[in-house]
Amino acid sequence: MKKLVLAGAIALFGLSNAQIAKRTAYISGQVGYSQEENNNNDTKVESFRIVPTAGYFVGTNLAVGLGVGYASDKVTKTTTGSVLGGSFVSETKGTQSAFVVAPFVRKYWTLADKLYIFGQLEVPMEFGQFKEEATTTATIGSTTNTTSTSDKANYTSIGVNVKPGLDYFLNKNWSIEATFGEFGYNTSKLDVDGAKSVNNYKFGLNLSAVTFGVKYVFAK
Image (cartoon, rainbow, N blue to C red; front, side, top):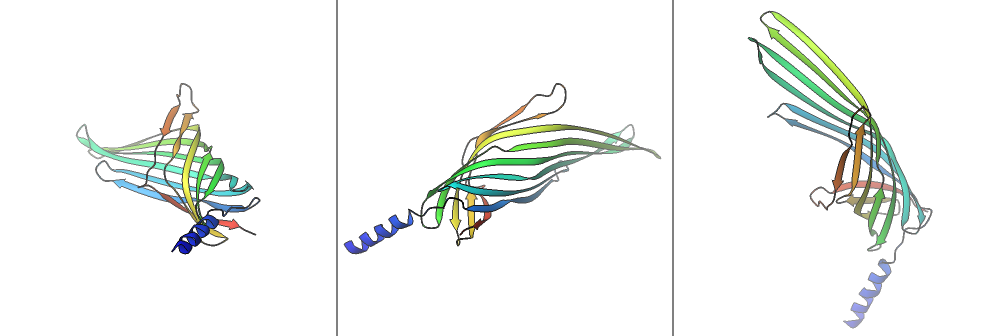
């Protein structure tokens, strides 16, 4: 029994010393689309994001990297009603699209031969445009009038985030990673006169919103 326990301890100790070697490179990224329709207020929200990521280990278990991509969010709201004995239909579209740049540093700690826990410090930046369009069609009797308005402004967003996660290597070239939670700060501002910044703080772990990703490692 003692020999079995000793053998298990030696095996566990050996697994816990697995390392990711310096000069190892990998590619990963985010691709996602979501759509939500609320029939209570005739609102539809669409989100799209694609951010390829590349990383390079500058030291044992220490990587630096960069994500570059595109993000878009669109909110469409339809309103109907009556006016002056007639009716109207109004549709408002708010679109936010941006070029995304996210440099990061990631530190790994070994849990087992193929399992690691990591902490990632990133500085996400967005350089984009917000556009709002509104179209109203009013019908009174046999007369129909349509009016449209459009407004747009550039914006800049920058943040500092820390994300914890787990990384499991299926083999030397492929791994599955999961992040759970985010701690950080983000500020954004429209490029118009009189605009004020919008600040967002995030602190906490959210095990009900774990995100998964696949990574390809250029292992030797």
